[in-house]
Image (cartoon, rainbow, N blue to C red; front, side, top):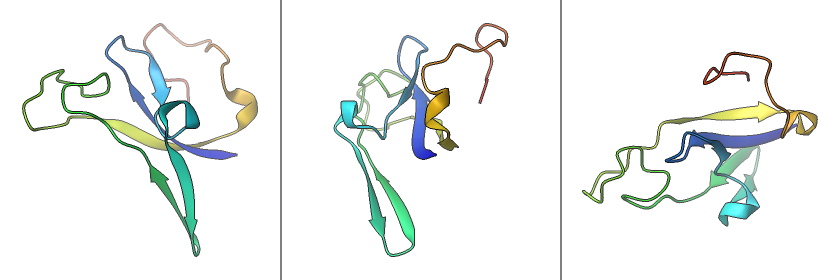
Length: 82
């Protein structure tokens, strides 16, 4: 299992922002796991797309099996399949 933080980019694609391709990482601190990642105001992961001093990045932390990564869903288009 892996912990991740998923959100949609500007094209609607779900992305694990807490992953190495996004220069992010997971850090163990004692018995806690911290997800380190960043977003940019008006960037690809700012839902309002505006550089206005507010970052809107609705997403969700998830604990998923690595064997599920990259598999397409059987659900309806645009639906959740976690």
